[in-house]
Amino acid sequence: MSLPHISPAKAKELIDRGAILVDIREFDEHSRRRIAAARHAPLSRMERIDIGTDAPAVIFHCRSGNRTASNAARLAQCTDCDAFILDGGIDAWKSAGLPVIESKGQPIEIMRQVQITAGSLVFAGTALGTLVHPGFYALAAFVGAGLVFAGVSGSCMMARLLSFAPWNRRAAKTAIA
Image (cartoon, rainbow, N blue to C red; front, side, top):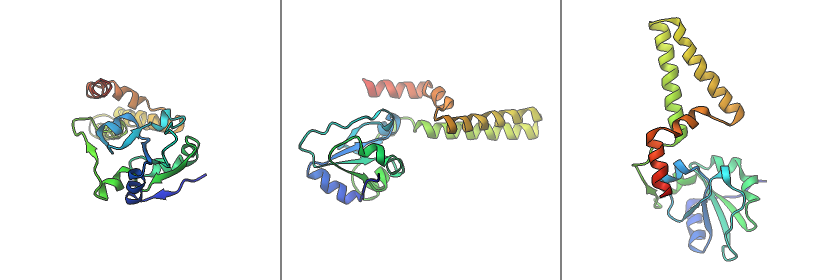
């Protein structure tokens, strides 16, 4: 099942008429940049959206629209009213000149932290393997194997480890309080 895509302008019209905007991104993404009118319901924990009886529709959004589009069937089952996907996600919303709340004090998204860390470790392992000792190539191989495991299993140990970093723990405490 697929949900229809709507432009940010059309979404804004529907929201002004009572539609509910739902941000399906994870906590770390939502805390860094969000649309004020959006309810936060992370996809990883989403079951049903309780919107009451007055809302004419639900509009789901993520960062770029890809996550909502690839999970359209699941999202459609979360509500009994008309449901849409915000075409282009929050990126398109912002590009259309519509307001977003940005908190630059929040750490960057955990998956970007994983990409930076993994890339740095692979680069370091390769450089050290070339310049110092071939044994350092094992570091690059270990990180590569971890990324393959994360992709196959859907569980990223590096993301879990990074979530315990002081800057991520501080951000989580601030948002919960």
